[in-house]
Image 1 (cartoon, one colour):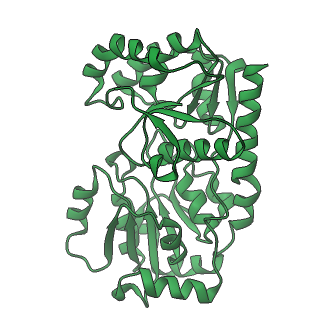
Image 2 (spheres, rainbow, N blue to C red):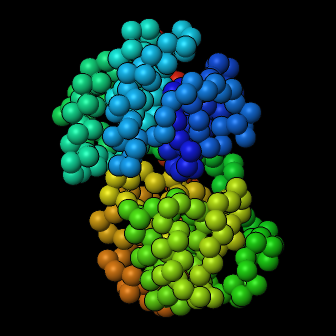
Length: 350
């Protein structure tokens, strides 16, 4: 695997889960780069001096670094498969690595718009000439890429979660989690939760507004560049509590009553929705956001505007608890997901 990221998010969790799962199945897995959570799982990693993940802020310098970074891939030893996760690695490093072994990408989100999106798309199309397979997390993501990649290289493998970790606990265990994890002022309240990277593109201010409209307390789990703005919007309200980055997300979800999902326009299949549903939570989402088709299977409510989440509607959500557990176990469990990746890897080696 060749991947560099310093911010924990869904794609990074995907990388760690794939590396861990493949190792448990007897494959040798090495990450060249950085990924939050990788070292904590005791997985093997090597540093090769790649620059930061590409973004609007780092793009110009990143493009200038491409020749150097291509040379640095020469220290990566021969392998059966090279797996690339983000746009920089895919666009800049696929061609040199593909001369040595099949290269596989995963694409997590819908294609971005604007000048940056058009610039990346041109480089992406050229690099795709050398890729063996592109794994897409949803059919919508695959449809975005078909004109530039070609249908024969695309395969859809929906995101998955660890359903042994994210579970709907019995009532007594849930009560204990609430008492231990929630602020004292939330103990007797209806508690909404969001657990995600806090990025302005996800418009999490809608979750704050919806929680207020419904008379619910809101637990904001996670961190990111938009946290300061969101804290200003929440002001000194005792009804909103920011936890920052936490490793006990599954317990915090299980201790809450319903989930508020806000998606960025480039999101694919949001794992946060799957995790919440597996923990028994009904999901409230906004029409038009990517991934909201999951709400039908996971149980919950689609709204247009935060004000639609009235006190009465929020109260009725509590009757839907547990409605998405079976759906997630059947369609988004980790075992079938790892099986699918092993098939992709095997096809590329055949």
